[in-house]
Image 1 (tube, rainbow, N blue to C red):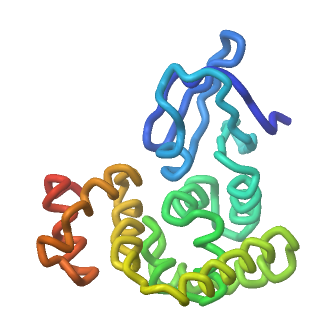
Image 2: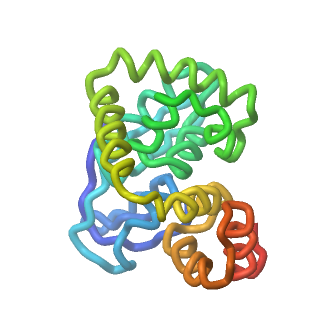
Length: 210
């Protein structure tokens, strides 16, 4: 079982990366969050935590920027009808801590922003994940960290709420976190003061893609 690889970053796409380890190139499926956080191509000593998934007629390797992300991936693919592709889609939309908040709140609307997840599937995933999070110490820890962060945020003005909501929507559409950040620059000055107007403003800045 390959659980971690360290090497030179040879290629980065939105959903795959290639890591050169001693002259051998390992192609791995990754979440958009992991891809956007990686350094530039050619950087050495890049470490990704990995999981190999063996299916009938295929052996796939997946890479993660943190042990927590890999851990959540393992739990997601353990849910009925959730394969690696859907698990990565969830992790491309939410960080592990953000997912913990969505699960704790049983927020079906936010869960349904995951590409490939409708409202019915969102509700089923939330119910199953609530049980998984409740029983697992590491996932309970993520949920507690998310609660602590929310409590701290409640003591200051929520000026970043709109940016955060729009950035999550853009990530779900396939944009990178860097693209989302740049697209939101100047939105207050432009009068985009609601989530809907801010999203429209960002999409115009991105050329209407998505």
